[in-house]
Amino acid sequence: MDQSIATSKLAADYPGIEGFYFLGVRGEFGYITADGHTHRKETFPQIDDPDFLAQHPHFMEELRHFTHDLNALRVRYLDAHEPDIELGFVRPTDAGEFPWRCATLVLQRDVLDTLNADYDALLSAGVKDPSATSVDHESLQDMRGIQHGLDDLANHADNFGVYHYFPLLFYWPPSMRAGVRGLSPDVAIAPMRVLNLMWRPAESGYGDDAGVARDHGRCSTVYTVLRSNLQVHGAIDRNRRVENRFQIE
Image 1 (tube, rainbow, N blue to C red):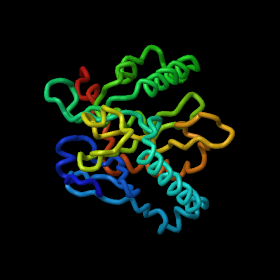
Image 2: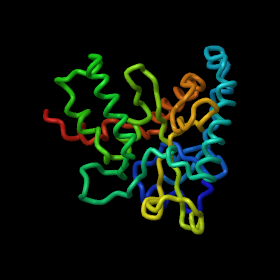
Image 3: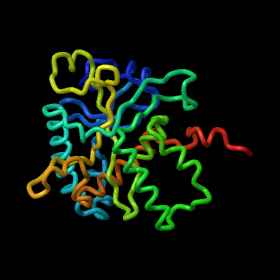
Image 4: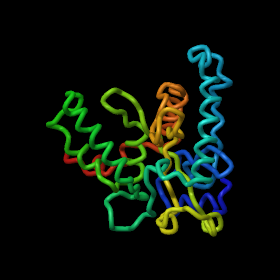
């Protein structure tokens, strides 16, 4: 990582962030390994797999678009501190305060409202079963364990099957944020931020409609790979969710 803090210290302070994607200030895109000691760059080994490329002939073009979009997000976030890029922030583990055994994700209010609206739409469309929704309702809270919460964000689709979010972690160490103007006041107490990798800057003709995942199919294969990688990295393990640890036999 390029941030001025040891990877192992970051993983110790925020248990559960391992395996989820991080953004560095120079655009480095990678993740902390499961042991919490190493930051590994995402290299997309699929580019060397002829069978994969034969099945996904537009993957290299998608990857170029993805790299462009990632850089645009980084520049906008660091230069303009665009608040719409943020989905929320992460709190370190507070022993005994919450039932989960990992860091805590705190969602922005507008993101939570969107998740709830999409959930209600799925109920109305008959996609969700109203008689088996207690666990889902419990998950639709502004605070939840980070593994549960980032899993929900990465795999959330609206009632049209469209993905709008992919969580991306970014850490503001004290040495970096000192003297930077325009940062929201809560960055000082919550420097681990959650960005939306699918965010796109406003474009001509869209007015002020920034912060949404436009051009949904632009990099769909790349995002499918990234979602799959979260499980490969061990970031998503649904057996570790609170509701799965306390089931009545």
